[in-house]
Image (cartoon, rainbow, N blue to C red):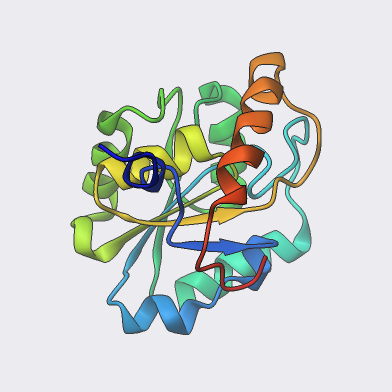
Length: 172
């Protein structure tokens, strides 16, 4: 296996500055109906416990556009459940991404298949790699804050190295 083909497992299909910049018409053209969205540093900063009015409106717009959404997080159920409830979406907590089981559970909840599902997240080694392993469309966003767990900070350095070779970015 060549270095390039190995690294492709870690490349997202799309890369955006923020969830608010994602081109949902592009997703609709690809028949995407379900979104598995990470929580920490994707939709809210890691230490945040409340959701913003803008985020509530964004999730409402997703619903109006016909997308079904499930939050998939490696975080604990108490926090993810509270945020999911605030946004009116189901949650898969303690997901242990990049394991396949979490993505399969999310698709089962949404009643979507692989061709209809996209993963949105801020981490290459959990969200993008996990979604790519499942042959889902993957979207990477820039993390909302620099606050990370110690091991995530180490992985962020590796992510930067991987992203140097990334081609095909729509926005970043």
